[in-house]
Image (cartoon, rainbow over all chains, first blue to last red; front, side):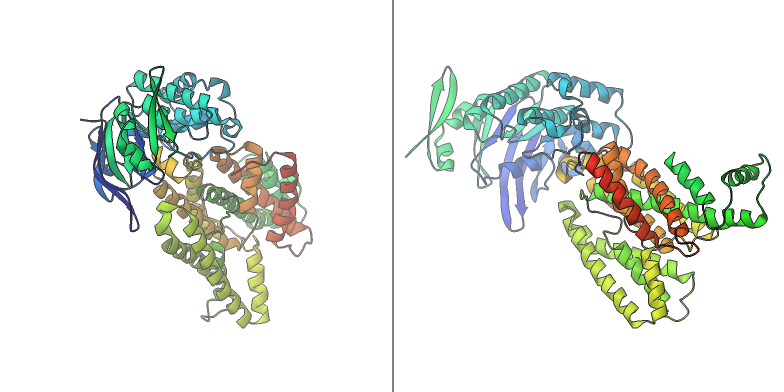
Length: 257
Length: 328
């Protein structure tokens, strides 16, 4: 049984097909990144895996349980989402924001219990958010804010975490920090990650596996090193790409035609 | 504390002067402590005229304020008030219908609140039927449906009013401005009390859900909140409670929008605090405003809606200028 099982998934909006016949199995503890040009259907695919969109055809299962048969709370126990543009609620403290991740456990009518509090505490510490805990979420920098959003998702204690462009708007250093942080969480907590990333170099360096999506269809699915070197990748972007080895790391470089 | 002062003020202050301690003494004598020094007329004024009116003020203020706060949370819109989905225009049409006596024989004190209540609930139901289906994609359509229903019913109400006699127009106008004057005796209070208490309790209990929902529709669903169901329940409770209140006291404006904002400026953005404190502030504020309304130009009365705005607006402006404004 895979952590995430996508079977023959098609998602439509009106008459437009956004994702078409996608089949994908992500093993437990694997980091799978979906790459592809703008409009390829990456966000739609990961939002459907996170349960925010309904499949028009096919199914998504998390640890063998079909998403379609879960209510919101059951789903929030199994899959957490770091959205591309999270809504930052002014006036809320960082600690309260991270604590939102526990709502699916303590419910809407009870305060967080002892177990919830210890999970929140541990997340705040691991993500170095302790010194900000009382701060208004609006006062954080981009990097701190993104760490806090990741903290909320980790507080959900789910086996699967879905991230949609988690490093958008961060500088190079913070992009790297964010992905390293996630990598260590993956190792520590046996997390399964499904992410989208525009940066092919970082996608290649951090993911175990890349799925290339174009026009809603999977064009290629394989080990990161293979996908970034493939002709299909260059074709999808409609440009020439070269992979350069820098100190043992693959760097994807666009080349002017 | 403010609530206590407002309650005692509501009982003690009035055109007939009755001493504070004599009223308090009388209250204690009813539970077997000490002896009352009120005459039977004074006792009647306090317990049959002022007390029911004061209690209705508490209920109306609490309900309108908590409904306003709830609407602001559920619609994530600072301009939301309890009348957003057409409650006011529906109640207005119902009341006008009764007052101008279209059906002949409806123009009695019983029919006005009943038709106002039916009108209010019909308006909200219509709004929900038109805009509620798209709730999965957000609340924009519902708000617009509310605007459409409200304008339709208001124009119908204006037409009815314009067709009626000058006497009726005055009575409709007075009703529209809102007043607690009709709450003499305990009848109206006992009529709305059960609905209003349940509705207030539901709204206050939704505080934590509204806090989570401040991160928006998609994210709250991914956090495990059944957004659609929560919205349905809190909108139903706010609307039902507001309709019950409006049917008895008319359209008291301003409380529903300004009290939750004042509270938000004082205690922050968490609905877990805003909603219960709005209940207390709203109750105290409306009784206080009514005490002013019925004493300033006694023996006649100022319209309550005018007083709530006259008192509330400056208070709001002062707090707004002293505190950093916070988003909803």
